[in-house]
Length: 175
Image (cartoon, rainbow, N blue to C red):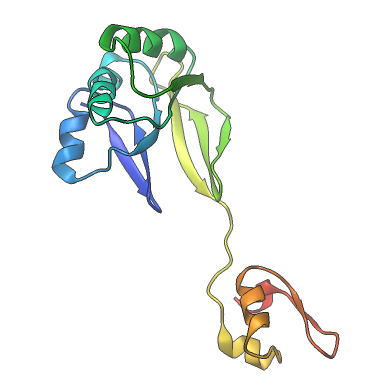
């Protein structure tokens, strides 16, 4: 059995979907509200659970679209699995072939791929977060002469502010 659910700020991503993945998801309370499933390669133990997962999601009345990502061969192999296991789904789905070196933008992070030595054009995945500002430092804001109120809010939303004396304070200076 192969499968890993990554939960990131309320979003659930499934990497691999081997036999038994659903059972383990239920056992550990992982959300079935998946939008995307990622496959590293197509040895059967990494994708055969997809058929049952899709059927379960249909029985649950899912209508949101779902995407399946995988290396070369994904359209052929996952397409055959979907045709074999489901007469008709209750939701639209799409199979997207990707390759090592691709970067999939996802808001404030990217999913990046790299080549793996496992045969069959296997790829690995990394969730790479974009740089974020740290915590707002009220003492530093006061020290720089920024009055409490709306200007603090702008700084917290990553916007620079201009003080009455013409001094520009950037968010980077107070986080």
